[in-house]
Image 1 (tube, protein in one colour):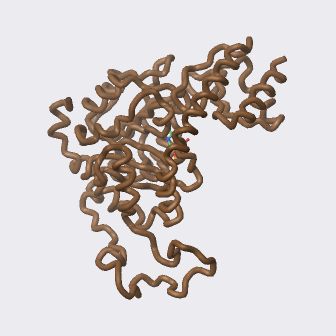
Image 2 (cartoon, helix red, strand yellow; image 1 turned 135 degrees about the vertical axis):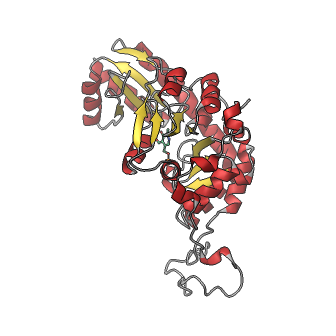
Length: 356
Ligand SMILES: Cc1ncc(COP(=O)(O)O)c(C=O)c1O
């Protein structure tokens, strides 16, 4: 149940004044999109490269067909869906919509995905941080204590990067219902998780924005397609603030085609999870590995003696993973993405060589 302050929460009042008053750009196709189209200064002779997608025409500014497809897949309404250039675009947009540069702040919970802080820094928005506990869970009361009327957005990530674990659902619900601003829940890795998406809660909590992406479970990082799921009021403002034609035709076409291949995507998720569990087990046999953290994502975080040196030696042998030892509570930690089975064997074999 949403708490009383949220039932009465007025999302509009949280927006920056210039955004509240924004008169959006009207694109050429807002009024007419059929007939003899000589309205948008396109090149009517077409692209020099033959294509089936009418690439000489601008794409749909709202990508309704794709939004409908994604909405029915996630069990929400079409009006709940915003599409961005990766998740990075909605992260930046939401900060720009709600945070007054030089005045407002966001709150993040390190160790977590670095882009929330970078996007805030780019926008001259302050960043408050309340660390996760040493076993990577939320300090709910500390977060609420650290928030004030200028803390406009709380960024949460579950499963979290780089720690790989799900945040507790009870903690998430408490924060969504008690935090006095917008709660962004980044579910980039949700399809690898045993925990269900909280996307359908956007019907209940007007301040919740759930982020998802085509970069992970769909295996389409190259098309740059991110999803924000929220109440229609927030989505409408996002549509006004974004660049008019942010999602290009090639991206939309690929994403629609991916929906015709869902069994393949689901099978790939299962394979990745099996490989993840295999690598976790193999890592745990190594004496130098002090801990393999539980993972609900497509990567593993593990603690190993002399992590920096191990990371560098792996790189010298052409195996590139990520050193995360500079993150709070992650001393001597490395993060490895689950690869193809032969790649995983190569990683494990190279690691064994280095440790012997
Ligand atoms: C938690 C999290 N969110 C978002 C992203 C980026 O997603 P996208 O490729 O959609 O920008 C990443 C990428 O690693 C991530 O770890």
